[in-house]
Image (cartoon, rainbow over the protein chains, first blue to last red):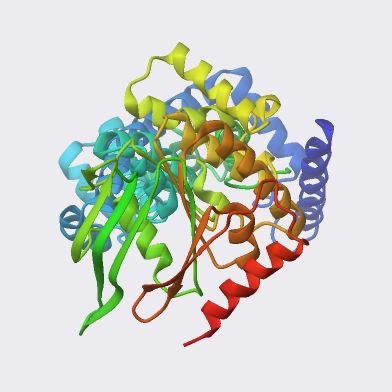
Length: 258
Length: 249
């Protein structure tokens, strides 16, 4: 049954590709700014052959992963503590409520002033974008842990830290994983947007923005395809894999069929 | 000495504007290895009583003693089985669920696995030791819950309508099964139910509760030999007696 999701994916991509090709070849917009899939593929191949694409991907992934790890180290514990202790909830919730609706990109000018152009600003941006979905989902996850688990565990002598580690943490995991997904999606917005403004020479966002100067729409679209494929790879290889080994295995969420 | 003893226990529920008496002046005693059922309609305070004995709630007045010692909180002397199948930890296999109490007690890994295997065998689920709860039927999940409550060797087993969410056939099977387990383990059982036939099938003695506030209204001793025949005249007579106590105001 392993081939079924692959066939499904191929069909959805095939149809989307045909739709784009029809649009590109129609004269709705000048063909110079609507490259055909062949042009996009060639441009992409060019950047792969000369190796630059790998460097761009490397820089962008580095910024995302560092920012995301920092966000997890900060966000998950805060969300956990907020869910368990009223005092901590009362302290952090107003801050989170005020900061989380501010788009990460709105911070770019300030972050450039504070951190300069380059990696630090981009990582800070990712951290900012990712931390709030992690805090809020973890907080919700802790609050929605089945009370019966806590009762059963405490009747068997589980207290404080043990209760936390052996019941609250695994019980909140479906929400924490949902938080990872959201944080990851927001990180891409932050890093690509940030690289357009704050990066110097390397990064996928920078490629897209830089191509505009020479109207290289094929490179632009090729880069967008790469971003999309990286997202797909992470969904399949990381998020679904983690889910299938944990919460889906435990029957707490349904297994993904795609 | 009684295994479980309640002396003039009162319990008041605090709502925002007043105090509602949930239990008034409840006194009862359960002997070692006795099977006591508490029967009453929903809202009669029977679950509150169980929660008090379990140590989840503190009485507003009176004393609760287990093995002669005053109850001040939760303890390893009591095992608890709830009605809801969701009481098992979904992220732990049947075996690891059964091991939970032993883990809390600090029993080393090897011994834990051995004890868990023994109790899974007792409930007839040794083949499902590595299954996760969602892979088991409702009846099997309740058996795991019983094994989990027994594994750390409490003297008292508290059960809150453990079979109420099961279909009728499975419930009958589980009642037979519980009697076997009880005879084998010789635990003192305090069992709460609203099902009169279930109480007559299981109990040595049935206490009938009346609501608002919950009080012990009558006591019926069931001296029928086990296994009991739910269609026998004597069985039905006991049911009739209990139902009449429940109905009379």
